[in-house]
Image 1 (spheres, rainbow over the protein chains, first blue to last red):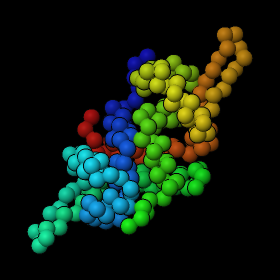
Image 2: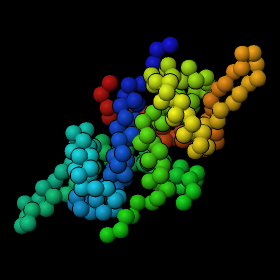
Image 3: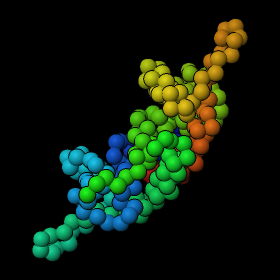
Image 4: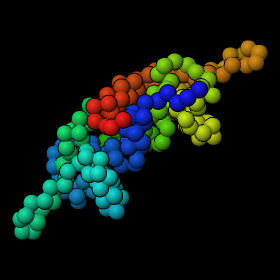
Length: 102
Length: 102
């Protein structure tokens, strides 16, 4: 038998199966925020967060916005593609509340 | 700042971030099936599939059913907790079709 899984679905699952990716998108659903805010909110190391944000930028899911203030302000936010992830994450949240122990 | 991510949501994301977990549940949405059928449909190695099915059994997401025929027939199926995953996977499927290149 040949593989029957849709390649696009497989790609989406591979993306989600990178640790922290889902949590970063989830965290950004509450609005644009700075690196150190994301880092503290989800408890990820700065090194890994930096790698994942780059991956998410390359995938067109996250945007890095630079505000030329003094000192310069850099914030991360979800693109339209990233915002479209919301219903997936809300479903996961709902499932986890119904089926997992606290 | 303290971590603000809900531990149950985090646990669900950790589960999904194990490679193949989502694809195995997705494959089982089409009904109970044998090991070799899942293996071929998603293109996973037998060794890894065996490990993941054990994890999914331990999580109460997948059930292993043994039919005492000759030769014995063993099929895997989703529990109620596993079936409750359907809307998450359908959402991921929908997102991948809207936002990813084939």
